[in-house]
Length: 369
Image 1 (cartoon, rainbow, N blue to C red):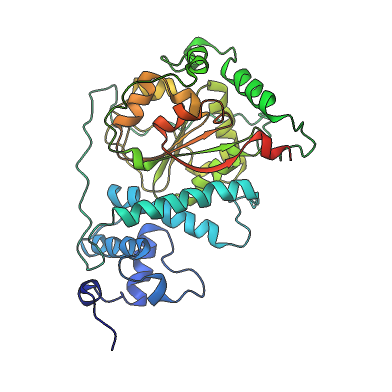
Image 2: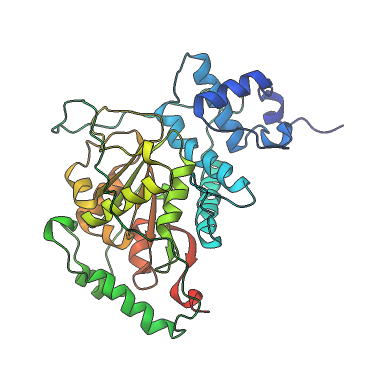
């Protein structure tokens, strides 16, 4: 006879089909994929079972939407499992993700699953997931009124998902460095650049000692991937948007015109109804709102940004390495952070100081092969 482990002996029974269905309606995600065996897919102690148990607990408490803590822990994880369960993952408008975009999503899912296993809450026996302590709200200019949706330019002509040219020059080392330096030295308006970001200084850091790392309890929730220019990082970002149906997503970029481009991309890829202006203070929404803003806005409003944002996507993540921007990222311990860059090979050490876990890599050398 098989041994009964303490976990097996105390685990709550699998909820019935009706309860699972109600939990799926609450969190707007599947707990069971087609043709999956419930006993295996929802085995006690697995991240998906923990997510289900936590959702059922919230249902029994009368919740109408999932809590902020549930959205932070499980919305992206379950959504990535859903998106990647299809043989050919697609966005809302039917765009198929290319292998490199799929790799970015699957690498992040693997990292999230590993983190959940290390930090699993005691929910497989029916015990509720502990609620997160509320984040301090710094006084700021907000009146609690809903933010206005950003204006989207119908005339924008954006093509950010083109495949990498297979005939690209294979002389990778000089080309990679040159491309990275060109991106870092772009001439942009002063009010569109992070206040503390010095591109030239970052390039000169090299392998110099950058000093003792600051205390960083949220480092395990910050990931990054490196994809060459033209590999479709923006479409990969749309994949993360698709995966987060209840948790809000904040996309940060270093130039105002890129804010407009991301908003146009969201509109054309099928996520227009989720785009909204920035939420501050106690404003909340559990329908996966997506906001695009600059790093300067982020630094200026640090401490007063709504906890509805459970995922922060950092475009051109190397531009988030300045002291004030990095400190604001480290101090916001609630969300998952996902950094995207094409220049990781040049300043990888400094990117990994802020985004410790690399989930995918497709650099210019690989693209040229």
